[in-house]
Image (cartoon, rainbow, N blue to C red):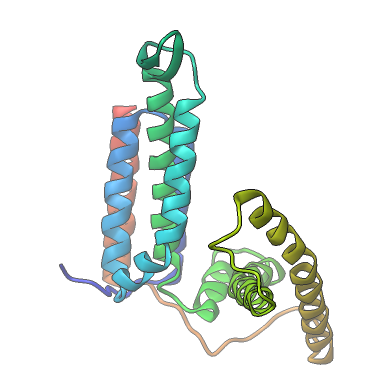
Length: 243
């Protein structure tokens, strides 16, 4: 399959917004499955290292699948599919709700993979071209960049606790959750310190000193962008007819 198709950041933002919106609007499992398939094909086509990105999302996908199973098990309305004595374990409605949640999260994950194929500078410029204020675009970019910071802080704190003799593999789930709660405060404090340092650096560089900004990044729609946006419009119309 051809991968790494270069699209304008505005095209990626619009297509990702379309997929995410459709995932929220519709609840029919067949429609959600179609949206997931198309969004996944789009994410594969725009990313050169899709296998690496999917490996990074593996833990999240397992968590989402677990939540979907729990949601299906704790929904009692509907026709029972699995019972132990008089206790209803799983119903058709609960299974449907769990699959619906799983499909929606899959669509949102696929939409995020579409966006990560562009640099933060390109995404900021794309949002500016879509008439989004620069402050909001910059805030979104900084927020995305902080996710790896949270992850690194969590890994460092976990390693520090393990060096002090706590083995997460040998303790129970209760003690493990208690240990994770102890990690929350220092991670939050360190993140706030980094945010304060970033704000000071922005002020030192005269952030928002001028009403307009210039950029080295110049975005232009190509033929492939018009084709993709036209296909996205046709797709929305087909989904509306099916719904």
